[in-house]
Image (tube, rainbow, N blue to C red):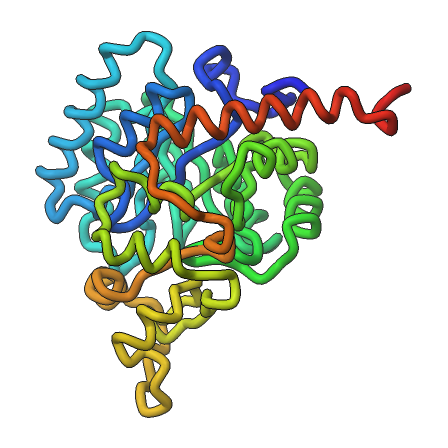
Length: 319
């Protein structure tokens, strides 16, 4: 099974050891995690809002670029921008993205043609995450290069559709790069996503439980202790449905009947809440350790290659 398909970004040829992206995670992904992933051949990404100011965001971008310049074959890095009316930093952060020519931009909560055009102006790629066909159609109309299908069980702002159904429906309306997100932790999972028709796999929760992750040891331990049944899908945190660790919701009173929660998306509420209410996907049940990011990447690569070899030897795969 080749590492690339027809809609795989040609500019990335030879730079990825495995068709995978370490997803941008709020208050989790920073320069250490991003650079270790990229050096290992996995696309590393982070949210611009993980820095409290645009100046700090710019400093992070420059730091990542300087560190990756030392590894000629490093995978590209990316930045996540929240494209929503309640994000007051969008325009300023976008100006930094254009100035620094960030290779990959991942947009959430809005596919806007002006943002797409700004990224394309310097030759960057832009991916957009969606949970259903309607939003995929809008993203395609806006001209994005890739669509991230956020299926059931993914951490953060996930959908409820099966990955099989979601991938098939999006592929009907979009011919660009297709990325699958949802409860994937191993190289075997990445191979399965690739076999299903995704060009890339999008892994989030597995990278929360790494040494370079910026979250607390308490949060990492909560993930090690959790199982799929401990993930709760709720809109009470910020007005948009997302998956969270039940123990953190209970500790913050979010699940109390007397707590009405938020009725519409609010970025200010989102930023405040996610400091103590912790997100994760249903794949937590198979996370059992907290390795260094480079060690995890090498494990993923080895597992992926083993899975590909097994598929090649499968008698049902024979002509």
